[in-house]
Length: 215
Length: 192
Image (cartoon, rainbow over all chains, first blue to last red; front, side, top):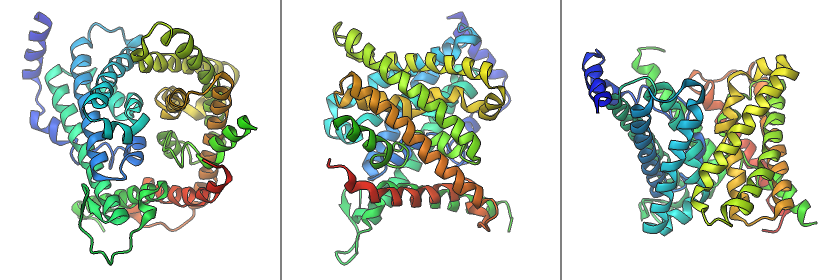
């Protein structure tokens, strides 16, 4: 408990506004669009908006829970063995998420397949533990994880929606395109995933360079 | 024949990078020079082959007999992490230039989802010991193939005129898309 209290005092001393810790994950340091982390699930499961959302939610859950635990134990873990410790914490929460999805949402669990257990090696999560949660008080780590999780989920939903709209003419399962629309089946296949993300990152960079008043 | 099918399927038809999206981070990160791509590919293949054997043994000789399959993820990732540590020490000793070239990405093999993905796919498909081993080698060779082709293309891209917004990740992903498209041509090779 004293440890926890010290964290709170530490937190108050910090000068970075708390809101910034949250907001930076949404755009400036968006894990998918800017940091290019967590590419594997981003590409693999975004063939529909719903799958993208489910993956984003599961990843956010694991990210927030492990950031909380790592933030709490960061002073007890010797630096030499920190990576294995973090991975065990992450793998534990992934197991929880996987078994929960399997029990409550068997359809989603089946369509995501082995990509749910693969959250263990999602570099967004280990990256945040290493870069942030191991060096900051627990409150800030949670905010940081929350921002990164939301940023990740939003990017996945956008990518999933674009691919679903072009590939199947619908978003979240409800048909939007007129019947005359020729479906781009390729968008649902692996090649379409690479293409959609590549173009999305390009557009992101373009907007960012415009905002800086560049060319 | 069955083993050959597994091998060809893992290397070409269901290529880990281009079809399952496993190992994308190093695929994008280390694919700018052929030499480092081949080095990382070989390190990954080595770790993958070892990991396929060890994870099968752990899964079938420890986790299943003791009825603790929920420890699968934790056990697999720990085995892979220690194997990577071993390879890192080995490369550092044997080939310092290669160690320097691979730099930060060697420890990152731990979080290379291709390796854990291989172990999970093998467990999911109920492969036997030899099948898992062949699958592991095939997945490693497939990864090496994809990342080397990519590095070859990117070396040529250096001199190309690319729109500024697409420089770096954007153009790499679009190139990967074309690569995946051409690998789809192999689809009919194996009856699924």
